[in-house]
Amino acid sequence: MLLGIVTSKSLHDDARFGAVVGARDIAVARVAFEDGGGLKALAPANLRREHFTLAHEGVLADIALLRRRISPRRAFQIESDAHADSLFAYLLSHVDSAETMDGALERAVVDIASSGLRGNFSFVLGTAESMYVHCAGSDIGVVKRADAVIASSESFTSEARCHLSSGALLRVDRGATVGWRLLCGCVDTPSSRPELPFTD
Image (cartoon, rainbow, N blue to C red; front, side, top):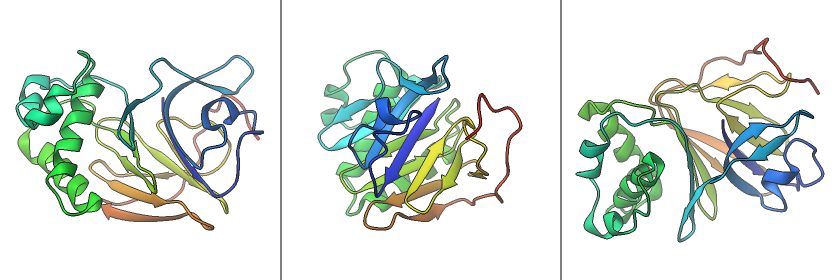
């Protein structure tokens, strides 16, 4: 499951998030449920380049077509055959050529949608100041708390979740108060999913 958290307070002592988040205020990872109901990071939990962190899971059916859209600099940084590695290089190619992070990722997700690329392109991308969540291929829900925003591809609490529409791109900013802004797409009304491994 994909998990992204931006928080204004430490979640280190929270049994669900402590092993994943630690003392960070922006955490991005691939996680799985533990027997006791908590979450554990999968290996690799995420990919890191400079001050960027990416979590992605799933298959990109047109990986060769995606790789042709990657800049030579970022193509050189691809370290494995993992599809997440190529997606990361693709996203950073857009970041390198744009004036703003928002503009880079908006252009990247629009390019994915308009090019006919097939597969699961949902991702969570963390920077030093913000987290970006994109929904394309798997469901992504968002929980808004007073001191945190939690995005995930599965429900894991009884809290109502807002669901991102396919193609949506959401930015969540850290700070004394955690705020979010929809860059493209829409957010569906909050709902609770019945299939919960545990409740609060």
